[in-house]
Image (cartoon, rainbow, N blue to C red):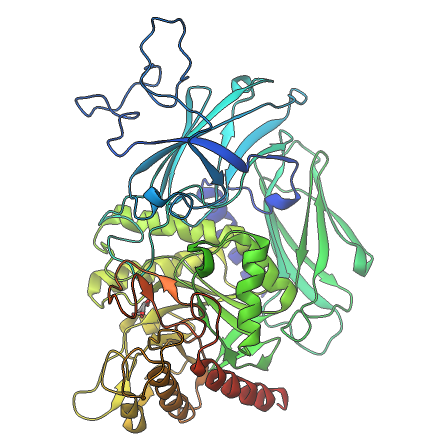
Length: 615
Ligand code: GCU
C-alpha cells in the first residue's frame, strides 16, 4: 500500500514541477507592498500604444509605446501619450462601473502606477502579483516587459529582476484588454457582464532567494475512522532546488505539533499523524494555524482538516452523508453594478446565502476572489469552484485546451488549502460532441492530477425525453465526474411550472445527483397573477412546483444550487420593462430586496436541514 502511495505522490510531484508555473500561493502571509489605489489610465481602443500604424507590434524601446515614459526628454520631443490624475481608475475594481463611458467598453485600457521601494539585501527576489485581470494583461516595468497573462479570474505573478527596480518612481504599466474572442475561455457568448480591468488586488511580493512557493496539507483520504489520531499528507514546493541540508519545519501551535523533515528537492512530500484534531465542517468550521519554515523563509495559513468524497450515490463529509442546500452566486455586487472583490463583498454574498438557509454556494461561472473562499472557510460554507469553460468553447483547438488547463491550475493552486472548497467544476452547459467530451475529460484528468482529494464535476447536459416526462442525465462526461450535476429550467425555458408535476429526472450513473441550476425571472416589486411572466407570483409558482418535484427526486439526489442569489447584469437581457440589462432570476432583486420565492426556498432548506441534522 505504502508503495502505491509513494508512486502516486511521485507522479503528482512530477506533475507539479512539470507544470513550470511560478504562481505563489498564500500571498496574504507574504511581505508585500500593496499597489492598490488610484492608477492613471489611457483608453486605447485602436491599441495605438501597442502597434505602429502598419499594425506591427512596437519594439520595446519605441518611445511611442505606452509602456515607455510619457515625459518629454526636451520641449521639442514628440510625445502623443501621457498619464495624468484627471484620468484615474481605482484598483482593484472593474472599469465599467467607475465611469459612465466605460459601461459597455470592450477593448484596451493602459493602467499606470508609480511606486518607490526600499531595495532589500542582495539575495531577495521580487514578484508582481495580480489577483485577477480581465481578460489579457501585458505587464511592463520601467520600459521592460515582465510578461503576459490571459484569463480573467485567476491569479498570476511575474518575477521582477532586482536590477530593474529603482528606489524611486518605478514606472509600472499594465495593458488590459477585455475583448472577447472565439478561441478564449470563456468564448464570445456568456450570460454575464464583461467587466474589464484590474479587478482584484495587486502587490509587489518580496521573498528570499529560495522560498516556499506553495504547499498543500490536508487530511489523508478515507481517514474518518474513530481513531483520535489523524493522518495528514501533502507536499511543500520551493521555488528552486534547496541547498544541501535544507529542512522544512511544520508547526501547528494549537496542537502543540512541530516536526522537522529533510527537504528532498524542489518538492518534498509531507505525511504524518496529528494528535486528536477537530474536523472542519459547516457546523464546526475549525481552522488551525499552520506554519511552514525553511532556513530562510516561512509561510503561515489557516487550514481546516476534513475529508470529502462521493461514495456510491452519497456525498460524505468526514464520513457522514450530507445534503447540499446550495445557491448559485455571481461575483457581482448588484447595488453598484460591479465585480465583487473585497472582504465586505464576500460577506454580503455569503450572509445572503446563509439567510436563505444555505450550507453551500456554487461560485459561478469562474473562480471568485480569494476573499470569498477564505471567508467560506471561516463561516463553514461549502464551495463549488468553477472555471469559465462555458457554453460553446472552441473544443477542437489544442491551444484553447491549454488556456483552460492554465486557468484550472491557477484556480486549484490558489485554493487547494481551502477546506470549504469541495468541488472543482470544469465547465457549464457545454454542448455534447466527441471533441467536447475529450476536451472536458482532459480537464478532469488534469484536475485529478493536481488534487485527488476533492470531487470533480461540471453542469452536464440533459437528454430530454420525447416520449414521456422521464428526463435522463446520460451525458457521456458523466462517466468521468464524481458528482453528476445538471441545469434544468422546467417552467421557464420549457413549458409552464405545472409541467413539473409529471416530470422526473434520473441518471444511469450510480453517482450522487445534483441540480446545479434551476430558476425563473421576476422583476422585484412587480406583482400580478401567477401566469404573468416576470411577476414575483410567476417565480413563486415556479418554485412551488419545482420544490414539489425536487421532493420526488431519486435517493441519489444530494443537493441543489438554484439560479441565482441576486439579479445580475447581462447584455443579453433586453426586455425594457422587466429586464433592462438585468438577468432577473435572483431570490434578491438588484437592491437586495427578497422576492416572494425567497421564502419558499428558505422553508424547503430549513426542512432539509432539520431532516439531515437528525441523521
Ligand atoms: C444557463 C446558464 C446561466 C444563465 C442561465 C439563465 O443555465 O448556466 O449562466 O444565466 O441559464 O438563462 O438565466
